[in-house]
Length: 109
Image 1 (tube, rainbow, N blue to C red):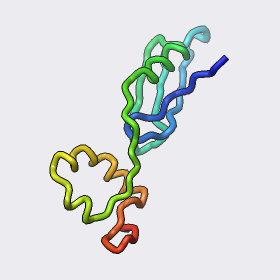
Image 2 (tube, rainbow, N blue to C red):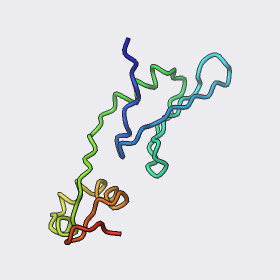
Image 3 (cartoon, one colour):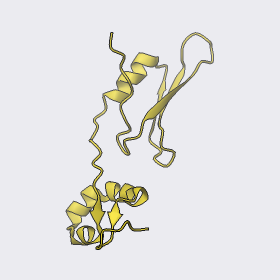
């Protein structure tokens, strides 16, 4: 038997976690799935959903693979507006992760 796991966050790629509240002690009345990255803020609240239903709903949304490229300042400056708009989320994460380099190859601080 294969156990299905929660897919990574579609926005930052971090592992999510799932919490239930059981006010009547029998069935979960509320399920909260949140990204494990506190700065991301991605979450899904499902009312009256059990584990299997919540898992299926989280995992069936479309996900775009997270591309974790390293950028140089020159590459970013050379991007046209469309390319920059497509990469902006990864560029923001790259800045936090130390994946943006100056023209000499040193990490920007």
